[in-house]
Image (cartoon, rainbow, N blue to C red; front, side, top):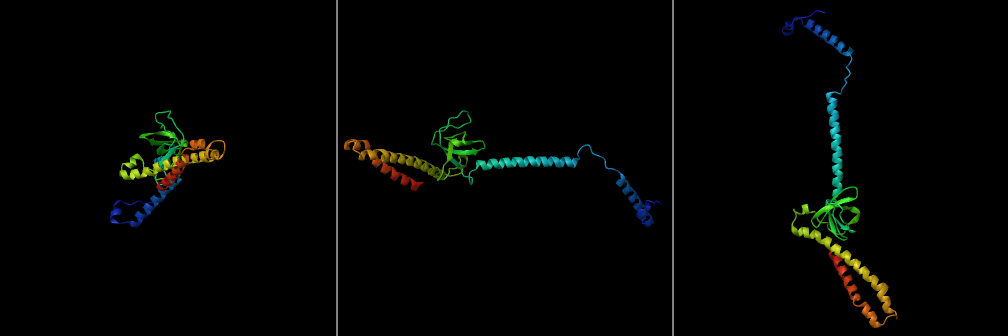
Length: 227
């Protein structure tokens, strides 16, 4: 194979000779590359390491994102309104981060976690309590949390709590009416119609419970219209 002078590349002379020489060099180099075995790498390449690290970081990010989304779903109720619950039993705290309450008290839930324990606020104090000791308040507007309430006017906040208070009073009055109905229907009225007691004794025993019963029924109807 004949070579060529470097000046031929600039002057354009001996073009065929230059072309044939370059083709021969190209073929010779290509054969060497094909015949040479690829070396075995004892450690992953930089690109593989970068890809692996990126995949690992992406996996951790997705796990954290799912965990955060799950907690957000638990801590929010419905469309994001404040969850208000009513105590079914008395609960006395055993630790400093727990919340004590009495039966019938209303608690604003600030956080819900798996495992049976929720976080709530009562009388300005926040703490944890067992979720099976409470039940959700129904048929009323749920009040907003104390943090969110700062952005609202006082009349709006009062309106939100108004429905909760009226509903709580109504439930207590219904229970009282039910007890009065049982006392009158099962005991006092049958005893009054029997001949075991005199009219004076029956009237003294019955007292004004009939009037109280009638009044309580009217009160419940009025509260139902306001609730």
